[in-house]
Amino acid sequence: MFGKFYQSHVCNLKEFKVLGGLDPDGSMIELLHSGLKNDSEPEVFPLKHHYKEMVFPVQYIKIIPLAAYGTSFNFSIWYLEVTGISEKSTVHKISEEYEAV
Image 1 (cartoon, rainbow, N blue to C red):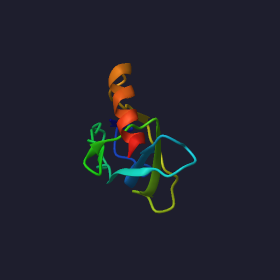
Image 2: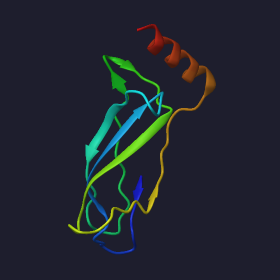
Image 3: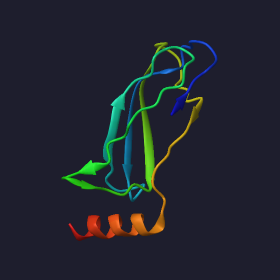
Image 4: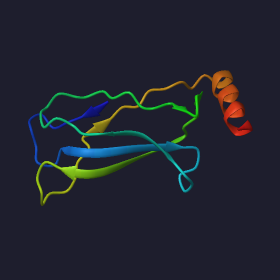
């Protein structure tokens, strides 16, 4: 979930990408390419979690801001909430299947 300022704001993300992977310095998969509405309502986005017809594990997430609503302003992410599966046996099984490919 992306949280925002209490009113529309020029620093809100008009366009962004979310990447994810197992290595912060290695190759990451694009999980989302979207943008926020310029209002105060938090927004929820489903992230891609299948690659080559299998679920893939994600340990690191990178958010790449591409555009803000104000052309000469910095980007702001007011707050972020990420949820997922952290149950050890499930993560272990998915990681083993992913590494075997």
